[in-house]
Image 1: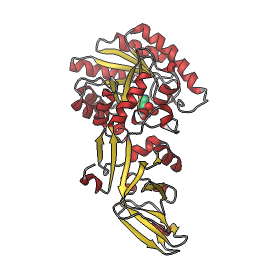
Image 2: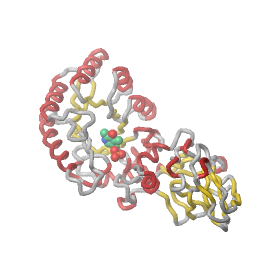
Image 3: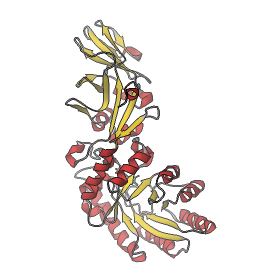
Image 4: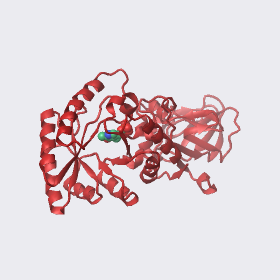
Length: 376
Ligand SMILES: *Cc1c(COP(=O)(O)O)cnc(C)c1O
């Protein structure tokens, strides 16, 4: 870190070497011949799309997936040759953007298939279509296997379209012991076998990170991993148990250290009062940076290798922490909100648990105000 980085109010350090290693770890576990598609939507879950995509490709990913056309447009500027797949629904103008970016698209209903066909004809090019089966997620895709087959057949027979893939998405892959996952997998396997007869070269894909780690039978031709490539655990436990290394740390620093007499309050609404004489540290980071307000009087911060509880509400731009009756903490000390310091670690999983959410939402919430420093 340069001095400049150390004096920022809050910043996220992204270890692209960890992203690369996590991808390598996933690739090693893939069933024969399956490819890794790195999911870098939502700015790589808050980690920075382009640098993380580059790291994922170094680590063995061969394709990139995003949710939105504008995300594909941005990535195409950095990766002129890499296959890009837009997983989400597209409006007519978004479809134009996605095709300009040379992306493959999800086809989830006949109406959209027809739109793709018209657009492809106008442009004089082929659109690569991935027909979606709703095997139980209840979002995009045809539920009825025969309707999926009809959609696939229509793509295969359309001179302007190429049936590039058939795919689905799991609703409960991250819930251990759940049986719905197996039902979805069986339903999709049958559909995929029949679609493959129409287009033997098409890519069959289903698994997200949880399915990839849990069930090799879900790998098919390609897996779509997001959360795991960032070193986070889809099961909300310890990522190290799967050989994954978290890529993001969220840091700030102590801007002031103040003596609080018993009864003195910190923060809006005076939700915390010093139980006895104590020291309070002020860190210039808040919910405007993505440190969620629900962490008030619940979360903690690492300073000098020790955990200190957040005292009072989280403000937009500041938090206060209880340093205890005796402290060596001084203004300028580093504060870690997500990450390690000394022997202590606060994972995105731990923060998520405190908030009743999942690690995905924690890193996505780190706002644009927080500069990302990428390095390995
Ligand atoms: C986000 C997403 C993924 C990646 O899921 P992870 O749980 O982060 O691995 C895969 N497929 C689809 C359709 C998605 O929307």
